[in-house]
Image 1 (cartoon, rainbow, N blue to C red):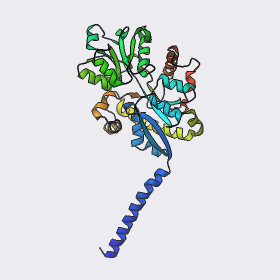
Image 2 (cartoon, rainbow, N blue to C red):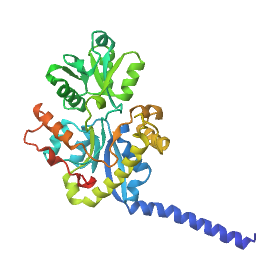
Image 3 (cartoon, one colour):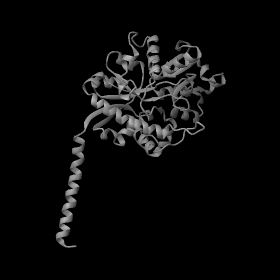
Image 4 (cartoon, rainbow, N blue to C red):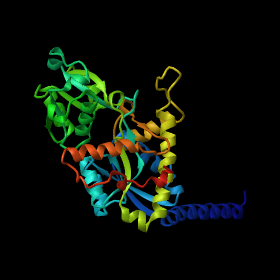
Length: 339
């Protein structure tokens, strides 16, 4: 090769590298910025997938993930404008903010569904020996929860509706977070606990107690949702439409990989299982095999269990946790998922 030809190739290669290096920031600068508040849980999986696989970018959005440590922090961040979107479990606190016009549900997140082991009821060994064998036996028992108004609180209420008791017929012991709940369970300070599947499996492996049932089998319900501020829907509706489209693309992919069942009803690995599991594991800082234990059910189109959301609001109103004037349907705008 002549020196002239070599020089020309080197120049063209350098020029190509320069174009590549400058075009990526230019592309990013052309995207509209948005942010979403999430927890480092597998239930946030579709958000992690949409970010990692470029579905938000494909819609023209540069989405920043902001991590929180409790469900209640997320709607507060949406209400204050710290984030544009939130995706997490539905609590009494969420509905109180929604009642004040601070948050609106636009799509579904995970839910407890029959056959999917997401939320477990566990009995201590002592309580098991004393006759606590099924979820129906929880009446009259001491049960550890995070806080009043939490998803755990509602699950107890749902169980009572099924078996003819109320939350007043149990002693709920609020301990603020799951680590404190598990410590109380291990120490025999409570009879039972409601916990995520990963925690439940570890407690059983440690010999601390026994799983006596799963919320999805007993009382299927809409655990979480994607929401935003009403002002965002009003002022930035195209952004909401783009975000939900990307989210639904990821929901469908998640559903195909993790929610597929064979003819016998057994969950099997679907297309892209290992890749998507790796994305969620990296985002949650957990080992893939641990993430795989508690992968929740999601509706592939982001459709919400509307009747359950209505029931949630009625329940919290009966508990004195939410304003009785709140119309549950006023906190939902499901036009983005065609519902």
